[in-house]
Image 1 (cartoon, protein in one colour):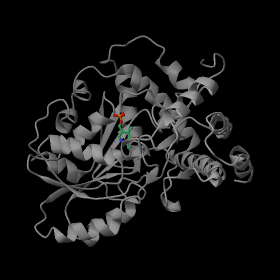
Image 2 (cartoon, rainbow, N blue to C red; image 1 turned 180 degrees about the horizontal axis):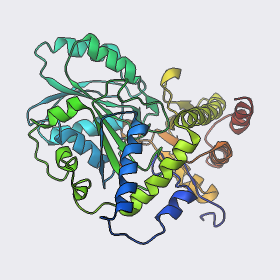
Image 3 (cartoon, rainbow, N blue to C red; image 1 turned 90 degrees about the vertical axis):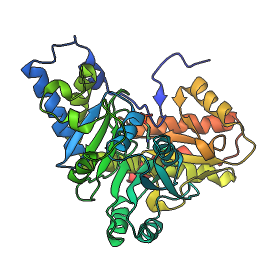
Length: 392
Ligand SMILES: *Cc1c(COP(=O)(O)O)cnc(C)c1O
């Protein structure tokens, strides 16, 4: 029986809560998209997305979800038969790699156990062994939303540089953008992939490629077929090229408002807020884990994500029932494990439009559901989170 009153606590790691201000910004008629007022607004959104990616490069926007922006990153830079390298650190890196294979790209995989981030030393060794420089790109997922693990991007950049390898550094930061520090230019990232419905507090439906000059140069010779995703068509001066047709006006009104909110808070403050809230979640999980059934999937403290926490559950518990009970009884939506952790983990999203009392409410719903479902845990996780937040 769904809880009929109050708000849903949306703690799926995408989509995330949409602020009322953003919802209201969409509540307006469609407009003639050739007017100076609309074009000015649209251009300001492109400019401000560069500030979010911290790049002087170009930002391309698609009316698509994150998968579309993945595809765009591949088809603009690669040709059939090209090789790419990926460290298999989670469900999303595995899926991006499969997408590349579907285009006839050869994927070299460094195997991973999904409990640690990308190992820069392994990447360096692999790139060093590619003496002929046949690897065209390194595909990296910044925060893998399945594992709750964030990789150290500057360390990966150093690995590429140490190997003196020309591969493009392509990063999926869909689940980290606006929750975790990201410096596209400083970190020498060539293609950054983003999506609207995670840290940016937007409805699903917009996705991004931020591209370096080196990536744009690679697009001149890439031979995977593309018209709709083609960066270069979208960078032509004609305004109707920006979206390869009608711009998703209302999503742009929404993003304009969301960007205003992000800059009012300040990106660095947003990162600090996400870090604090994520630490509170981990304090709760640490207490629950004393029942010897629940544990954090991430092993390295430095790799624990600001935006999502993956909690492993010992064998023998029905996680779907747990998740459904949490939603139906307490109106708290959490997510299940993905890929290798399907049926073995649940995930608490904590990104975007969220504050301390919201996470306390969600954790209380989770802790109560642990009791209802008789999943062994030590009580007091919520209290530990409260005390952490009081001192943070
Ligand atoms: C959500 C997500 C995607 C896919 O985005 P969709 O909008 O669901 O297509 C890709 N990568 C990561 C890391 C994600 O979290």
